[in-house]
Length: 289
Image 1 (spheres, one colour):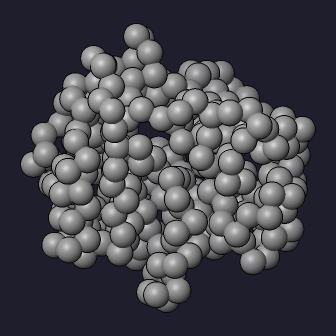
Image 2 (spheres, rainbow, N blue to C red; image 1 turned 120 degrees about the horizontal axis):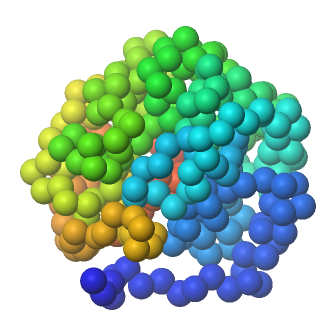
């Protein structure tokens, strides 16, 4: 299936992304921009931003839509990773940082302690930087979630990924209701934290199902949602079922913001979880908690 014109982006040029890429290589850090083949890597790297991928790059789940490598082996955490991440944030001068991880189901706490250590290092090195975490479901370990939240991130993101009917096919180790519960627990237990979630479209869902997910997320008091086009990483991954038009993405945005009352819905073909994530600072200023 050929990509429509609205999904075509220029290949990133080395001179535009070189400084960030070199710094990441120098500090031996991973980014989801690189590991997940994000189409916005050129724009984000050129702007001096990145979404850091910790505890990776191998993931203990093999979701058939994702380009991150599968690795179910038991692996020790790198105790130097938080310090290196904190240094990268300071050297890049980031005002907002996104920290995410692969699934680490081999760890008792799902990697909660490593998230905490990374937050502490960022706050120590860059105290004015706002921090957004994009976390896995932690296998429903709510004590691990509490550990993460006691480190006081400003934004907690957990992606719902797709509609419940598609979970068995696209996210076989995920549980739709568990993801919703995680988001609601954060909102109720730490009311000053902004909650965020995201989903892909074009996997085989209907527009009505997308609106149903938006309703579920708002019922569970999520503040911000991202919606983007699924792009298959390769022949071994799930195929694209449809290319959603820009007009339909705008319909999702209007439905979410104007009818359901989300603080923000970022919805476009190339939107990804961390795309223009720094805009949350504006929301925090206009909707303080």
